[in-house]
View 1 (tube, rainbow, N blue to C red):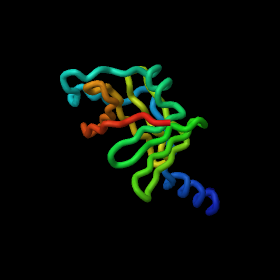
View 2: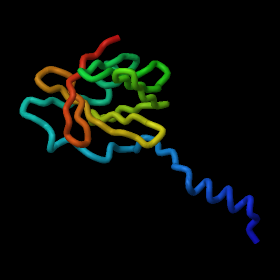
View 3: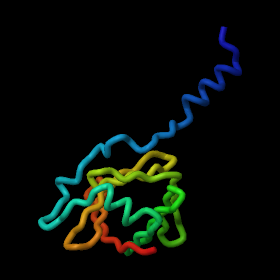
Length: 128
């Protein structure tokens, strides 16, 4: 016989969202969103140039913190994640508590460009 307290714990555990870490591979690729002249970046480039730095965009800025955490700020709002990950193919994953987000970095006409899964392109400037 299942005790009511155990049943309640089991129901609460099933209802709570599971924490999803960044996947082993990005899960999508931006081939359909590339433009002539776009150049690939790799994980080494991303690690060297973005870790412990910020990237500014027209609508906000993201911080790749020294402790491995991440923060994006736009106006008065900000979103934080305990971790981020760079992949060899130029993807990066932000390990948000509500689920991971994967985007790609490329160089477009010599500028750093972030491409989202919807195909949106954002030009960024690396700052300290």
